[in-house]
Image (tube, rainbow over all chains, first blue to last red; front, side, top):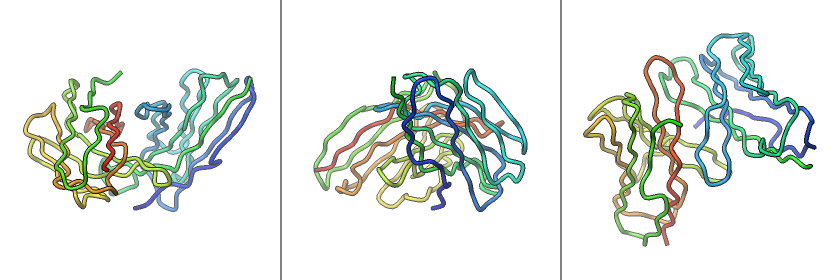
Length: 112
Length: 112
């Protein structure tokens, strides 16, 4: 099945730094979702995007729905140790109803 | 947190034995999903349900069956477990008014 291309695959950053990651597809998407997963737990929904160009924030997290509808971006400002985890993008391609397609994940590690 | 529980949380079973995993929700959401998560493959959809007794296959449905006799419960059955079904299984729920999916805590299944 299709997977979204997510980059980078992993990041090692220092506490206080800003983080950027993105997700791209060859298909047009109606919806973009960003999840965070910590070890031993299920993915937790962070941000949902529904319109091209939409920019949505959740605390220090900001995500954007790309204007081409084929990509999305997640930024984390002033990272802290509890930001550690794997961040997944997910989207609904046009014509696939409610079935999500997932990205391969970005593993974020934060050093003090 | 979305009201989703999965049972059991951990299970070790032998090849050839039947296994049933349960997902229970208290949110009255119409859609329920079963995913498996494996290194290198991310989250892949096994089966999903769009209402009581209404189910459909996902991208990796071979060897799995599901049943939904009540809105709140979605069962995943491995009729005869194989080692390739060793994985972490996640249940998710969703509404029809948007495409957001909320995940349960997962079940780690090991088939020996």
